[in-house]
Length: 222
Image 1: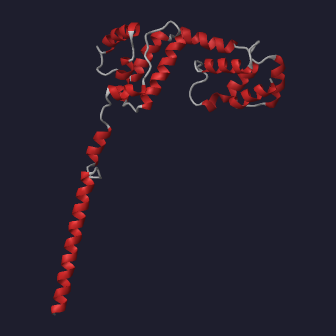
Image 2 (image 1 turned 60 degrees about the vertical axis):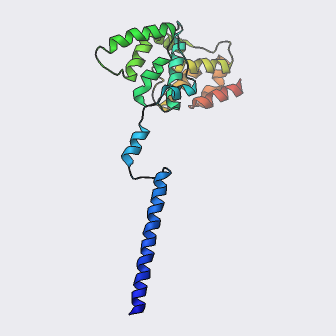
Image 3 (image 1 turned 120 degrees about the vertical axis):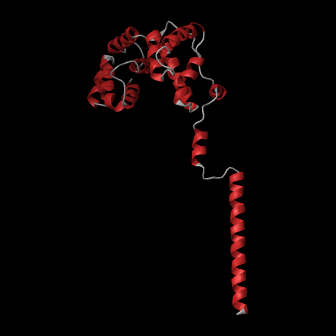
């Protein structure tokens, strides 16, 4: 009986030591940033607003206003890249983007902002985008770019120059929006139609319907 009692006592002591070790380990994990089991607090930490200083680390571009519509489009695309690069929360996109406006553009936004906030508090990103393009890249300018694309010909330029101009104009075209696969064939046909006659007769029979492949083939033939 004494042997049995001794065995039970030793087992109880071993179990107590194991519980103590487990408590110490859990305490250390919490102290050093381990999982405390409070998922709600962790989620709140991830969703905290970003500071302006953090956003400015990527050196986002400034915009002072312009008479060249493509410059406005280039800035807007660049500021979107900066917002994505720093993973700025969507609710802060307008705040940070408009901070980069200077001079005439800043004065324009101050006026538009007062008008928009008569009806709503926070201004949505799409609303800012619509107002920005309405001011600096109006529909008439976009239609002009579309017409320029439809009339573009290679002429006396090199394939590299023609392809660069063609691709640049495509980003303003209503046709070339959305999924690239949906308008890839159209791009190839339009590009072929603007080639000089000798080059056109060489590549059209190949029926290449991948734009990058078509341009590379034209370079080789040229």
